Image (cartoon, rainbow, N blue to C red; front, side):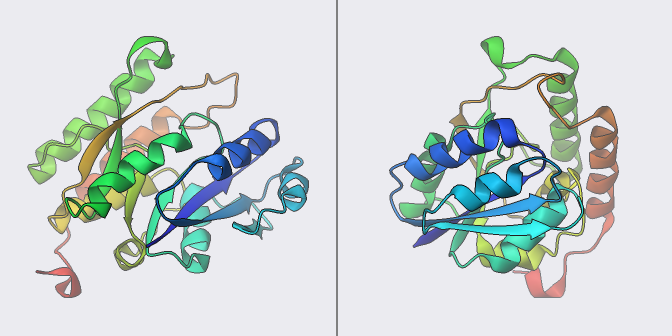
Length: 234
């Protein structure tokens, strides 16, 4: 099994070097590749990527910023793994949790695994961010008669071909809701494992906004109303 770790990057020069170091230092239970997409950054992102000579790293560059969903689409098109997981470059997620996500797959218990953030202790800097996340997740659970704990988690691990078959169109943060909505519509219920999470503040570069939450609700409603593609029916 080979795992493709997909990292979208936009103006993260202060954290990117450490993010790459952490991701490549983990003792994974399988072969990995790290596919990084520089989404039109205007800082030293391209230079930092150029200085990394690890053969497991592939770097791609967008001429203009197109959004997280677009960056992931580029990464997915270039990835060569059997499975994929997304890892942001902002150091909010710990790549040492990725082997925990792989566990249920390697022992045959699951095909799709989500990392579930507890939002406990000091990690939840913003009350409204946490409430917004929980509200979007509750909305999805009601719509699809499911029970997942963290829809907006970055850590979504699944077969690469499954992600490609979802045909995700959202260019920005809406891709998180679109991915989950399409999985739930197909009756692909994620297996969840607890992960650590250290949120950063708006002053530290947090990019997601309340409008992204509203967009997520609209995307979930759209996906609920759409029929399941015949090619995905079981």
